Amino acid sequence: MTSELIRTTIEGISPLDGEAMQAARQRQARLTKPAGSLGELEELSVRMAGLAASCPPPVLAPAALAIFAADHGVHAQEVTPWPQAVTTQMVANFLAGGAAVNAFARQAGVGVTIVDVGVLSDLDPADGLILAKVRNGTADMSEEPAMSREEAVAAVETGIGVAGRLIDEGARILLTGDMGIANTTASAALISVFTGRDAGMVTGYGTGIDAATHLRKIEVIKRALALHEPSAEDPIGALSTVGGLEHAALAGFVLGAAARRVPVILDGVTAVAAALAAQALAPLSREAMIAGHRSVEPGATVALAKLDLAPLLEFGMRLGEGTGAVLAYPVVASAVRVLHEMATFDSAGVTEK
Ligand SMILES: Cc1cc2ncn([C@H]3O[C@H](COP(=O)(O)O)[C@@H](O)[C@H]3O)c2cc1C
Ligand SMILES: O=C(O)c1cccnc1
Image (cartoon, rainbow, N blue to C red; front, side, top):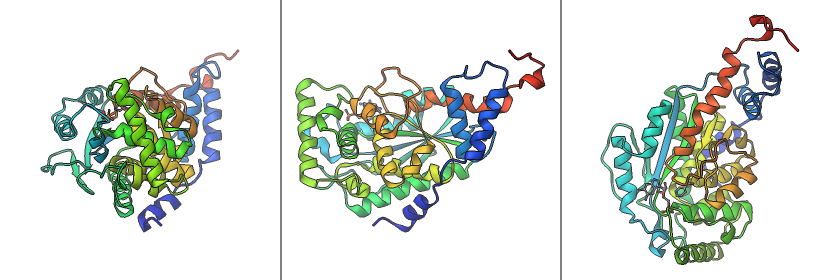
């Protein structure tokens, strides 16, 4: 059905470690603060202990962001006002350090890697760029499958491989990023498949489209869903018919992180669409996921509910690239650092109530 690598990766994902979680809860109760005063960060630290199967879990540095870039055949249906060339041009911008995500990453101390998993043009090798093109963009999902099953499997494997490579290079937390003009169309289609919600409920304005384009975008997605009838029971089939190469790779990236018990911060609508595919392939992978922010794309909120993840930040952002994940990173790292560095009532000689 899939491949040996995908199968062994999925089999390698195990539940959170209850003992480490219990130890983290007990430690939280001894730290010099009123119990529960760090709110959601306390439960996040407990989950991070369970994921790492140790208390305290490793300090979450260094952090590595992978931006998966790919093009989309559905662009032909005029679902976005931007030319496809912008995908490749933005890859160059990322490599030069000039994108929003680069500024955020420098601020947060996050390493940035770009992965060409399927942009239209052939790219020259460059520092910080992984050349892993599966094909030069997808086909138009409204007329034919976006890619073959084999290509979807290859892209998932690429994502698993990138996660493994970044972790082998020392990363203690991974962050998702995406670049692909027209990819909010594929994201909405995937979210519709995995949540069962109507395309009209999960399709947003992407980079900024007018009402007529929005209606056309919804119709294009409906046509693609009617043509291929993708099912949540066949995640590779869904990715291959109505997904994107970056979605498939991001699904693999999430699975790869989960299998290595490394947390992965999800960015916006593209990431959560891919995370739904990962969850469908391996429900336990959800335990490694952290929702960085709530994108304004309506599909993102629907997907987050299905993943049962509460986003850390809500800034009205709709950019992608990994921007929301990078902004959330210091919050996640701080939640874990508490377990390492805060004094207990005993050690600090602070009187309890
Ligand atoms: C200059 C520019 C930089 C971006 N950075 C991320 N995206 C985001 O917008 C695109 C998806 O929106 P749609 O589906 O409406 O085309 C993706 O490339 C996504 O990463 C950008 C888009 C543009 C134009
Ligand atoms: O939420 C996102 O990631 C997003 C939204 C609009 C356009 N590109 C990305």
